[in-house]
Image (cartoon, rainbow, N blue to C red; front, side):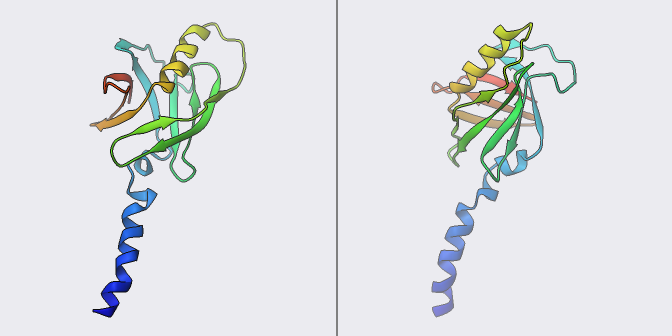
Length: 134
């Protein structure tokens, strides 16, 4: 019985481990943006497509806004909540900066996530899908 008491904290810590969060399964996967606020996004199949890569160990994202490299922190919770911190970007001149600016602004509105099949759906505070990745 005494040994069980010592194991309880271990199980509590294991349950809180970041490896039990879904972002650990997203590690090093490139999530390519295919839809923003209900509008399909044209993709080329290259690294120039707007995309996110999650680093679950550091709770950081990297990726592309379609032209510039992007990076920044995120917080995820077991209650399917996801929020991005201040997202930074390189400052190259781009032909489609309006698209990239909208993508970065939309990331600020993310509050929830849902992974279904091969897609990652990011939702706003009203739980409406605002970004769809695959």
